[in-house]
Length: 137
Image (cartoon, rainbow, N blue to C red; front, top):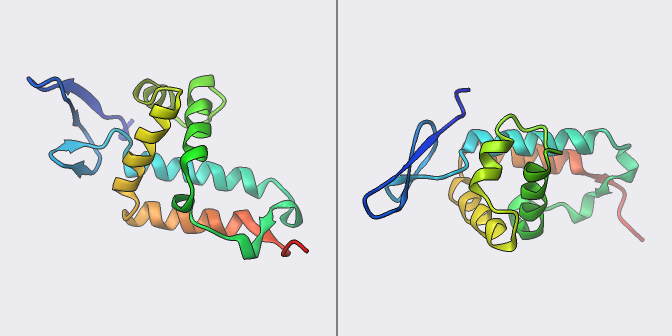
């Protein structure tokens, strides 16, 4: 797939990414903006399957990035279990350990691509789909 990146080790033992992705500090971020956009789109589709009145309240709307540590761990767990429908789930599971440390690395990598226009658009779409219920009393 065009989303696949390959890696090798530099002489210093650091992973160097080759392929499509955003360059961060001279190396490639392990998860690309394209891969994360797919993840956000999958999350939006899952929320779309729920009736609008059972989704989260509109007045609680927030960006994925506002509080994503637990969600990062859940995403990684889905990649590792095979529950995720992401086409690159095996590659992503190999990159991110199913642990709090793996979730923290994913969070850092996602923050490095959060300004990508496709990521920002997918984040906005997720908010529009996820937060449709009336405010809680």
